[in-house]
Length: 268
Image (tube, rainbow, N blue to C red; front, side):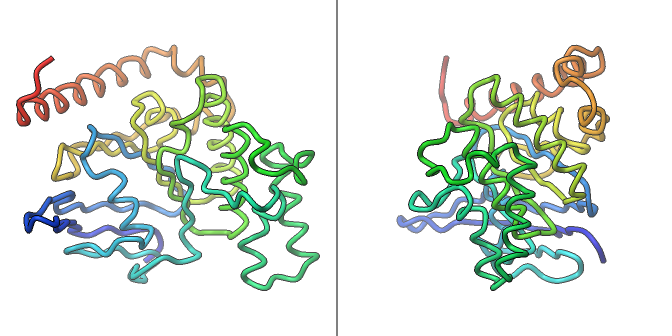
C-alpha cells in the first residue's frame, strides 16, 4: 500500500526513578503519497516523539509504522529529517553538505554535481555554494538543510519545527519555499509546528494532538496550502476563512493548555 500508515501507535518512556511517562497513545493516521500534513498541539503532547518514531529514531512501545507497505524498523534513506536547527556539518561548505548523501551512496561525481547545482538553484543558494555554513544566516542554513534532505531523494520529508528559530520575515519566506518545493517535488511532507498560523498555511491536512498522552484529537482538511503555492501568503492570512479557522484552533489549543496548567497546579 502506497503512503505512510501509523496504526495504534503508543510510546511509553521509562524514567530513572522507575516510573513511566506515556507520551503517545493509540495514534492511528494515514498520509497519502504527495500529501503535506501539519501536526499541532499543546506543549508536551508528543509531536516530536511521533516524528521521531516515524523517522525510525525511536521504536514504539506498541503499534507500527509502515511506509509504502514496509514496516519502519529504524532510520532509512526513504525518510529525510529537517530539524529546528540545521544540524549541518560545520567543517563542510554548503556544496559538500548538500552532496553528503549522494556521496555516501557512491553516486558518480558528475551526476552528484548536477543534483547539487540544481538544488542550490532551487533554494537560491548557488552563489553561496563555497561558503562555510557558519557564514550563513539562520534562514540560509535552513535552506541548505532542505537541499541536503532533498538530495537524498526521500519519499517522505519530516520537519520538526524547521522555522521556529527564524525571524518573522525570514519565516514567511521559508514558508513559501516549503510550499513551492512540496508542489514541485511531489514529496510527502509531515511538519510539526507550535504556530497555529503556520500549521494552517502549510497543511493540506492539519492534525491536532490532545495533551499527553498524545492522541489524535481532531483533523482539518484545508485549502490554504494549495492556494499558497501561487498566492501571497499574507493575502491568505487575511481571508475570512483563514481567520475563522485560526481562531477556532487557537481557542482549542488554549483550552488544552489551561487543562494542562490545571493538572499541574500552575497558576497565572
